[in-house]
Length: 400
Image (cartoon, rainbow, N blue to C red; front, side, top):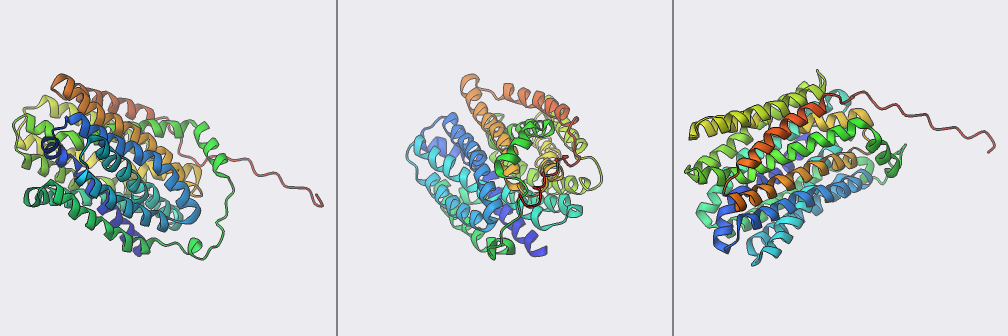
């Protein structure tokens, strides 16, 4: 178990850590290329949508053949995408590389695939905790990588910084060796009581699955809008780029604690109550941030508190999916839940750029984020966490 958690956590640290810093490239790239903020935001929006779409298929492949091959392929795509992000001369090519390629890469190197391995190899009494550990690793990656990326940009320039990251992300490949599962490596068939179609039909007819998807949509909208647009929002308000860099790092640091706490609490109390509390709290925190006088200190306080709530939705959401439906198709079902998250991410990052270019302000999108937080808190309260009751398969008569 220790090797699985260490390697899984390290992969998430690299993959999530790098992508959390993409907001630092918004102004350097748009100014150097003469592009609008919407051009950059649209590419990152496509990245999130691509991540969601490919995540479904990555989950299916990982459930069927094991996570190792999926992670290896994802690492290669990630490196190619970062190189393309550095060298793309047009907005269209930038969208293909920073958007489609990196999105596909993240599908194979982040939560849905890693959590599938955890779900299959760690007992239910420790599963939520273990997922919290993996999510905390992604948060530590943000704390570690965002300042590193800021340093690389200031020291090497934005293009060279991306090329350095392209080399660094290939470290995922040797780490993937620690996630090879014996049942897949030996070629032994994994017992399936349901086909993929049956599992999907069951999940999408189940109201609690639909409610979890709705809540995760809001999570994606909020965190990606804030992560990508907050550096530019703060610079527009007259604060230095260093404030934004420190703020993103604080989000990552405090999210280490938030995700771990959420995962641990998921072993002791109703996960739907944890999720509802997180979403309601986000709405309150954003409201207070907008109402308070803006200063470096208010930004740091906002980032710290928001960090506790940042990805703390991930362990309880995935754990409750495993609790309801079991682990046979966990990566795939997690992929569908995450697809909803990424639709929200697409809208959050794109709407931020769109509204800024049209109005010169992010205010409307901040207000939408508050309203959605209240909505997500409400829809998580009716979720039923008990394992779904399935009819026993009919037995064939003897001699038939």
